[in-house]
Image (cartoon, rainbow, N blue to C red; front, side):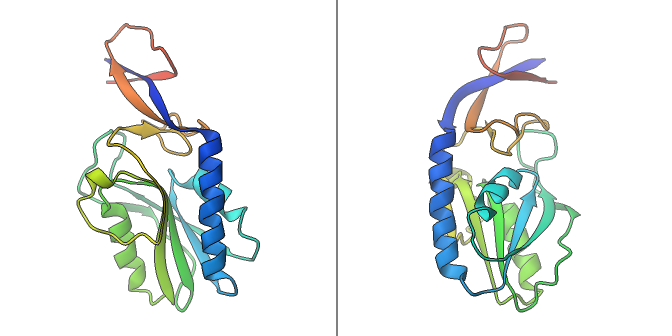
Length: 190
């Protein structure tokens, strides 16, 4: 059994808050007077989406898609599964996909293709954190917060085995020997 612990905080709460405000400002400029639909990619983007939409001063539509290529592990699989799709008719509307972290790019690429077939007026993506070094598919990002190193991260909505989503920051995890007490917040993987 491997124990997990926080290795380092990559993005603290204050840094994230400032970047979310900055991204929201850009989105407000670009979408003022337009029929905007925010599509939150569950579950990881829930915190980012909530913070982002509270900074948009005009009416928006919010919908959710649950798409995953991680399952319960720490390494991505190649299969994109759609567990829950959006219910909103996006034809002729401006759609902004919201994700907390982009890794390989496969999930956002899949969703851009899927929703592009539904004839939106525009279709773009915003991500808070970008693991650019892991990209296997070049996907266009209209808005990008931070580039982060190739480490397994948790917090601010992002999980490991459905844990850590509630952390107000984004942190890297490390494995430690079984039986060793974790120095920070920890959980176990088998």
